[in-house]
Length: 138
Image (cartoon, rainbow, N blue to C red; front, side):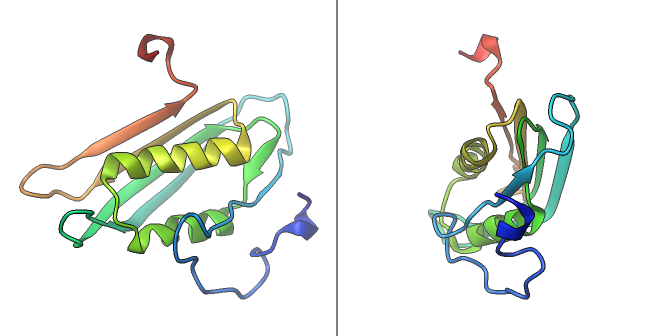
């Protein structure tokens, strides 16, 4: 995908996709292929739905990755993350889904997704998923 192929960046689209399945993670070429550098994307206002109660869940999601050939375009990422707002899913599933979808779109050298979810019943949950999985986890 070239910059001319990006469908959201530079356009006035404001309608969020109804679900992550409808969302498209757009990518562009890494400007420094072969160099190891980290990209950190911080989303402090993530929201989804509790699959049991239907109540909103909020989280601070942090995505960190070392790109290989591709980088994620941030407006498409914003729309993708926003598409979770009406998705009933457990917190652990959300973090792992984001990781899997980004790995599929980017094939990064390394990627970590962390979600710190709002406290429920006095317990705050943080989930972290990594690619590739550390050897000790396999």
